[in-house]
Amino acid sequence: MKDHVIISFFIPHQGCTSNCVFCNQKTITGHRSGPDHHEVTRTIEDWLQSLPPDVPCEVAFYGGSFTALPWEQQEYYLQSVQPFINSGRVKSIRVSTRPDAIDTALIDRLSGFGVKTIELGVQSLDQEVLKASGRDYDVSLVGEVSALIKQKGLTLGHQLMIGLPGSDLSKELDTVDRVIGIRPDLARIYPTLVLKGTPLARLYYQGKYKPLSLWEAVQTALLMLTQLEKAGIKIIRMGLQPTPELQRSGEIIAGPFHPGFGELVQSELFKWQAILLINRFMESEVTNRLKIYVNKRDLSKMIGQKRRNLQALAARFQLEQLEVIGREGSEQAWVGVGQWHREVPQLVLSRQSFL
Ligand code: SF4
Image (cartoon, rainbow, N blue to C red; front, side, top):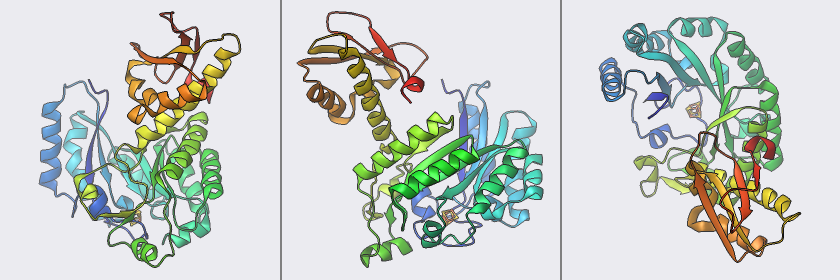
C-alpha cells in the first residue's frame, strides 16, 4: 500500500519569464495546457475514491513557474484544492517555480492556502552555465530564496540538471557542494536531453552543443547522489518521467535518455557498495563462490540490467559462482555477503556506512 500519494497537475511553461534552452514542458509533461477548476476537482475526487482514506495525499503543480503566474491565476488553482484541504483529505500542496519569482510576501500567501513544499528549478549554481541555458538571474538568488523558504518552515526542494551547455563534471560537483551548503530537504537530478523544437536542438545541429553519453550521465548522477545522500538530502527522482509524448519517435533528438535512468544509477551504487563489501570480506576469507544478500525490494538494483552487476562482480573477483538472495525486511539499501554454503550473510554493509 502506498504511504503517500502526490496528485500532480501540469501547467506547461505557465509563468515562465524566459525560454530555457533545454526546456519543452509540453513534451516532458505530455500536457499542452494547464487544467481548469473542474479538471482539478474531478481528478482529485477520482484519486481520493481510489485510495484508502488513511493514505496522506498531496496536490502538486509542476511544469511551469507557479509563483510567476499573476496572483489571480495562482489563487484560482489554489482555491480549486481548498475544499479538499479543508476536509483534511488533502494534506498539503507543492509547487515548482524559478528562484527569481518568489519573495517573503508570496511565501506567506502560499502558506495560507496549504502550500508546504516549494521545489526550485535550480538546474546549476554556475553563473556561466545558467547564462548559456537562458536563465538570466544572479546565481546568489538561489541561496537567498532557499533560506527564505526554510525560514518560513516550508519543505525546500532543488531540481538539478547535468550536462547543461557550458557545464562539465567539475561544475556539476561544485553545484552539488553549494547545494549541500544551502541544505534543501530534497532534490531531483535530471540529465539534459536535446528535445525537438528547443533552442538546444538548434545548438546541437550547429555542432555547438554535445550531450552527455548515457554512461557519463549515470556516473555524474551517481557522484551527485552519493554526496547529496551523505549530506542527508533525499533524492526523490533521477531522470525524466518516461511519458508516451517524451518517448514518441523524434521528440528526443539526442542525449542520455533511459526510461529507468534512476534505476541505472541506483544499480551502479549497489555495485560499488558490493565491491567494497566483498573486498573487506576477502581480507579474511578465500573463496570463489559467494552469496550476496539484499532486501527483496533491492534485488533488481543489485542484479543490474541484463545481470550486468553480477557479471562485473564475478569478473572482478574471479568468482565461479555468485548468487543474489533477496530478504524480507523494512530496511533497504544494505548489502550482505557470505560463503556459498552458508544461508546467512557473514558481513553486512549499510548504505549509510558505505557513504
Ligand atoms: S526550465 Fe522551468 S523556467 Fe525554464 S522554461 Fe522550463 S518550466 Fe520554464
